[in-house]
Amino acid sequence: MYDACELNTDCSDAMENTSCSNNGRCECKSGFLDVSKTQLTTQLKHFGNRTISAKNVSLSLNSSHPIAMCRIRKLGDKCDLPTDCSDAFRGGECANGTCSCLLGFRANKTLGACEANKIGDRCTLNAECMNAIDDKSTCEAGTCRCVSGFRANEVNTACIRRRVFDRGCVTVNDCSDAVADSLCHLRECICKTGFYASNGNTSCTAFRVGDRNCKTVLDCKIAVPRSQCINGECVCDTGYMPVKNGTECTRRKYGQPLDKTV
Image 1 (cartoon, one colour):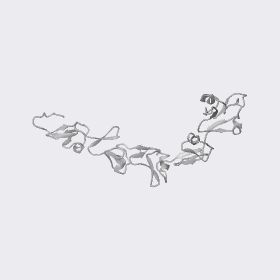
Image 2 (image 1 turned 30 degrees about the vertical axis):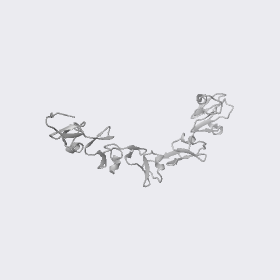
Image 3 (image 1 turned 90 degrees about the horizontal axis):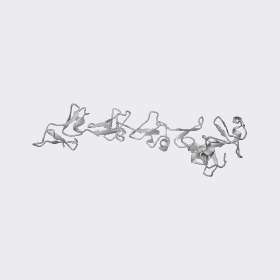
Image 4 (image 1 turned 180 degrees about the horizontal axis):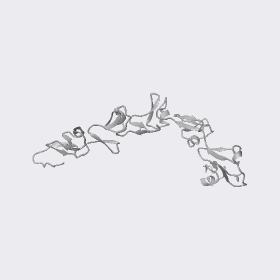
């Protein structure tokens, strides 16, 4: 440890969790702590001047420096840089020279790490949710929740955008903020009348004349005035013909063929 080096492998091949630092010396990787020889006495076996390995330990015995090992940093360990802790465990920060938990995380002394808040956990600040969950979460009425248009995943650790047919909505905005032209009906996101789910239920597309997936007269008539649904297909009313790629029905003119499409 602390021997001169040029490449990361000059260090890592001799001792796990080490790298060649910017000053050309073997040091523990970011997120790891150099543990002194006195803490390893019971784990060592001496085999002369060569590198040996014990369980979870790598030791260099041919160095002029004291024997050392690198272990992952834990909550409460000393630190100098922000990455000393954040590279060791999620939610870690270096505060006053000690690895602590960021806002939105709580200490788990058994694991020596930080546990993140989840959707449904108590909070007082938005950061307590956003730091731990994602930027689509917020602190509302003292509880971490997803913002409008998003819902919690199955384990309440992230907020995902709602889709058509997702259940659990309460207000119209829960759906429309995620998918334009959708609404919440009986706690389920559905497309408004005149629209149908498309693109993997991430969009609501307006019906057009020629579409063959309508179910009611209103599916077509609301999207295209003077049209109707016949045998599952949107068609123009008698005396009208489709124009503008099926988005309008216009009155036929004398002399135009019956199957004329503009």
